Amino acid sequence: MLPTPASPLRFSRLLLTGAAGYLGRELRPRLKAYCEVLRLSDRHDLGNAAEGEELQITSLENKDQVTTLLQGVSAVVHMGGVSTEQPWDPILAGNIVGMVNLYEAARLKGVQRIVFASSNHVTGFYRQDEVVNTRMPPKPDGFYGLSKAFGEDLAQLYWDRWGIETVSLRIGSSFTEPKDRRMLATYLSYDDLERLVVAALTAPIVGHSIIYGMSDNQTTWWDNTHAKHIGFRPLDSSDGFRPAVEARQQTIDKNDPAAIYQGGAFVKATPHG
Ligand code: 15L
Image (cartoon, rainbow, N blue to C red):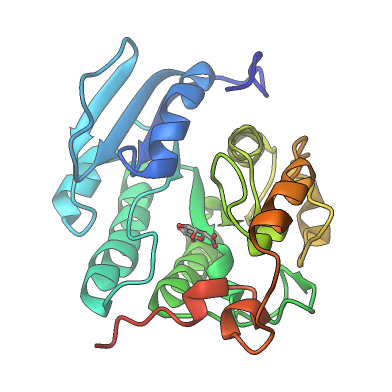
């Protein structure tokens, strides 16, 4: 958690979806500093409400529940839905139907800004020897990445047609530390995740913008040149973890698709039976 809030702006009611998920749990106490009321939703148990929190158990595929969820909300941080490669049915429910329900509810309830947790897996089939920018075509590495590409296109539609602003965050690997060599390039510290989400919530004009979520890592495959207007400045880096990671993973099989493509093991993950 950042010692002082990354922005003095405060929302009257901010909604965090997917609040019981691993990044949702990390953001829950952090986002409180940026709003009067933090509304939290998930399909799973959210524990007890702390002061200034509202809890609403919601299935994203349930249109009526999602419409109720967005009532009275000033902005949304959408971390909900499926966050790994899975069979099509749960992805369809959470990431396709759920996204349509969320944006329809935003339109009906007049919500103006959504921060959407997209993923680096939208472009997971680019190679690790390529640098990708946010205007290059998607190359999803599975159903999950494909569903996030759909989410980004949906956000574009709702901006073009109804003026709802979105920042789509192509989040890298946000964990306490990078677990392997791939994550030396894709690592996003939790403090930088907070900086990224807050920048996306508070940048004055974003339309629909896409930005990769990574710390200031020495190795990088992603170029955020076209997202400078968001004002995200990462202050952490995977570099300090490099000696330990390289000692742990001394060799790489250069014929392994997980070592060739940016999506890593996701390019081999198979829900297809
Ligand atoms: C993601 O999109 C996943 O949600 C997360 O679990 C990580 O695996 C991350 O990508 C990654 O690429 O490391």
